[in-house]
Image (tube, rainbow, N blue to C red; front, side, top):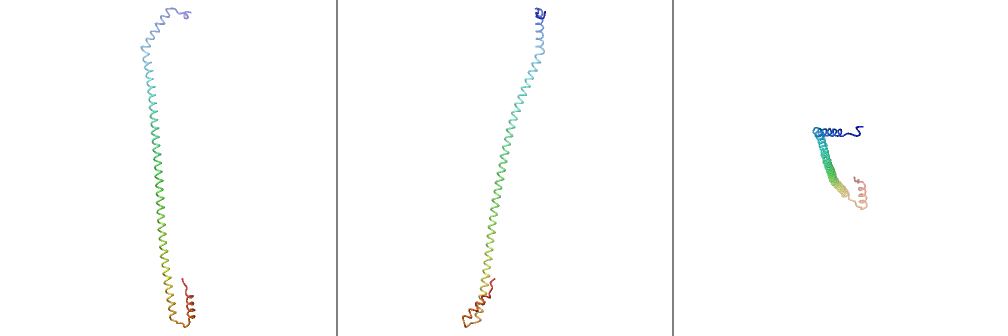
Length: 164
């Protein structure tokens, strides 16, 4: 039961031992322990700073990626707009060329038709003139005493004439 009610000597020697242990711990253990704790604290702070820098770098990269993506989208839109504009220009040029070619062909066809028509009219006029001369010549060669015979003769020759 001595342990439950300690004596003064036990308290004294326990106190002295505690103080010696405290002095030794302070002299040899506290500095390395505190150094290790401080070093660990520094490493944790460095890791936190590195993590913060990495977060900032990631945010910067994300912003740069977004910027590049927006630039790429703008470039894509510009290329598409240029392609549409080029397509429209090509279509309008092709239409203009087709229209002018169609007008030229129509004018050529009209001129050709007009030339052929004039040639046909000239040929018909020449044929009519030749036939008229033939009829007149035949009428002049034969003089009729009677007007009725002359009319019958003209009708007969007109029926014989075939126009091509």
